[in-house]
Image 1 (cartoon, one colour):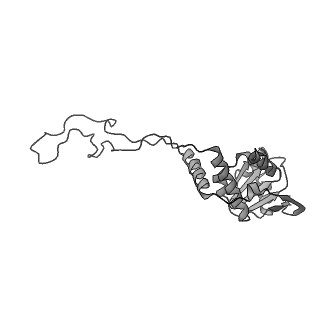
Image 2 (cartoon, rainbow, N blue to C red):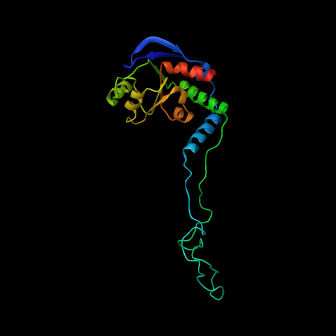
Image 3 (cartoon, rainbow, N blue to C red):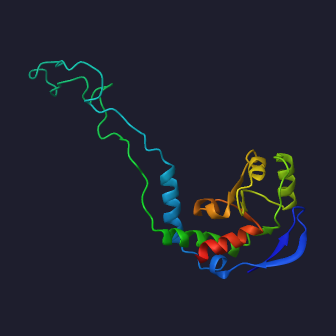
Length: 208
């Protein structure tokens, strides 16, 4: 796949870059992407939910009525789950939702997501740029020149603090380094903008 390199004004520089078919030209593996996204979302869960059972509820343990002769069921404590204010039966307990996935599967998932974006023509390539100081207005101007609409994922070769700070207050825009891309972010974007050097980072990362 061949992409034209744009400048920050949105103009074609006349240069073209070949994107490796081993990264952007694969047949997407939907099940691998599903598992990777499932793991990503599971890892975001704190798992600190907790409800009190009958042995944890504060209250008297005095028997509230006699055993027989009332015409109703036996009741030994107000902390029983059948009473208001009693404990909860089989309530949630703190747990860890994370689970393990093989590195190879996660790699296949990321490559599938990249290939899916390339197949749908949602990938753009922009030449390397830098901002002297963090300026949200300047970043907005660059994104407007690149005709971004909807959710946008900007991928840089390495951490660029000024670009990160300039983008963090812009809705639906996320900045990530090529080495830190994940399947969820790739599938959750309408347009992928690659800063020129990030292509080499991806090729080195997945060829290794």
